[in-house]
Length: 89
Image (tube, rainbow, N blue to C red; front, side, top):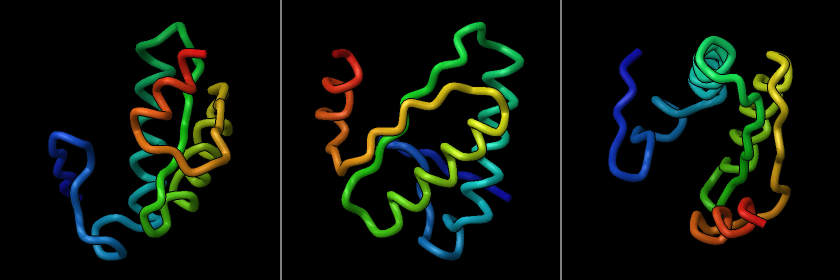
């Protein structure tokens, strides 16, 4: 599986390249990275108004939690800049 990242993150065709299965694979890879490389096991996850954004954020959160990573899940639609401001509080 090839994953293409642009200036704003993961790029791909919804349902073909970005779907529940590929989100799960990326979440597990990220979990492995955090558990191997970081002593800080806290991750904030949010979503925006795009199609399936909340579903994909939920899947990502569940996989991280299953890998003993503390997830702070922001349960409302936020723009990226609003999410950063919210996390800093």
